[in-house]
Image (tube, rainbow over all chains, first blue to last red; front, side, top):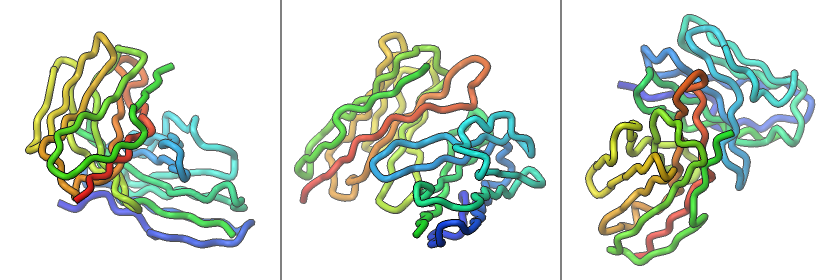
Length: 112
Length: 114
């Protein structure tokens, strides 16, 4: 079946604008994660969803970042008032425990 | 706090060589360990998953081993090919209450030269 789908694949935005990133997980996967990967850095955990609830939001860098998940499926990560340091690749992953984690191809965000 | 280290950070080998990538972790209370590859501009692709009760997993030319007590895993690639060039990451899932939260290594950048 289809893998994890993320859109857009690339996003260039001006500093101060809001952006919305979308993730379509694999059908039936109840767990969904957002990670951030900056150049030369490892994966940074942002948020974890189990169904529609987010029991762990501890990785969100600031209150400019928020995420939601609806219908136990699609998730959106919203970044308000973007800053240059937000430039990174944002990766989404989904799984049904204890199966492997499956990643999308990411959204490359560039804030100018 | 779990820490995952991958050494070397980069490795360059000639085509056809067998090679080993290393992953070490500080807390042996793990549920499983997963190996991924990441091609430039792409997400992570799952290669192998080893449960804590297992010693190794094999898929084609890949073999991953796990020694939980010593906090080590290796990924063995046989007869390497230029198409194997990528960054390889390992990630551990803890056992216990926060078992949803994987800890990733920073990866080993592998280059296989024709």
